[in-house]
Image (cartoon, rainbow, N blue to C red; front, side, top):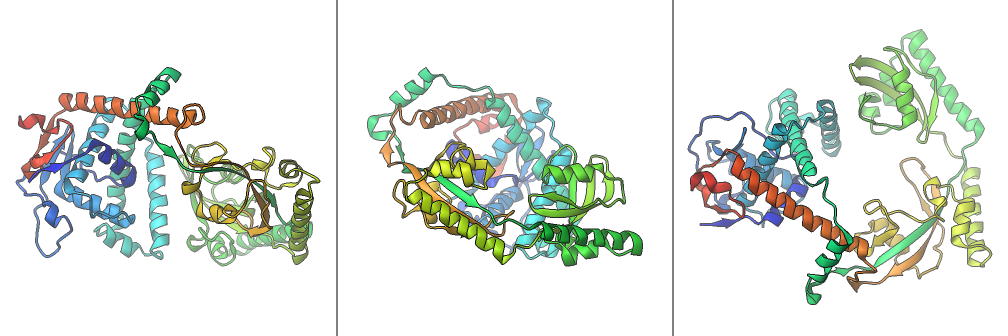
Length: 477
């Protein structure tokens, strides 16, 4: 039976699988092991299977179990694997190993401290999702110890980073000229030209209730009491973080974070204070956008700092909340009555510094422009503006974010482009992006075919029956 590996599909898998591509580096002697066919691609724990080497790519090997792990990772992310074959995942693994092998040959170096920090974040995210059980995490990865889990995750992350950096290097100098964009567009048959969905431009005005100076001082005094109790009475900083910190993410671990001087984490004000401390020292209270903190520097390990902190967020009074609500209602009234434009009201009265100078205009975080494609818009934002006509101002909406427990906002649609067939002049930037992607795919394909010819590759067993677009089987000819 033959299986087909489609290159574009494989490139999609690269995006889906992220940092969890399976890894095996040391070349070991080949064992004859018949891989599973498509009809038994799911795990079958009722039988014992010899985990054989199914491929060698340069200095790397691919094990049959690596493909099983790829299925597990996809399923863990909620991706349906019903239409994904073992051959497709096998092809994706071959590509990963080829990129990683040549990254090493090209002396690409990855930051191991950054990789270990990423692992901590991955483990924390999993434990948060699974209710904080390391036992469940070990069972999921079929590991008998936390140490072996971290070792495998390190190799997985390291080699995925090598592969990503190699691919980035291949395409980093690729640019397209206006003539190339025009040629690409003109070569698309008219009946096959892409259709771009409805796009909106959205602006908002934010009013945030103000915290009183008395409440700020109360919080500062409380943090000073915590510090004095630890220093003078030997109280536990960790225990106080667990009981009193408003940082829900870290309080379960006693307020602990690992900071690295070379890899920014936390806001600048927090890092500046933490990196200025000596081991065992506790900072004075200081303010960030999240509230007021004290930081305890537990240990310095080279570039890494083990810190604990307590965050207290000042409470909002009912008077402050009502004052903010009255203010935004008055702003809306002035706009609706035509006394001021939405853009001018945003510049004059909005508390959101990121948008107010642009008249409240929201920036699409994915495209970094003002347009939001309707089908890709954040569902919450879409729900708030879907009934608005162009230029209409929403009712006052109560909202919150990571920094503000309560905020009020007004929304308006400043422009709307209905669904339409691609137009060269109107959609030039989108067409340019498609042109760049097409050129990158061609360059990557050319690089891959050249490197396959220059690299030792051996594919074993029934996986030779997979049908490849690239010449992975050259060693068997």
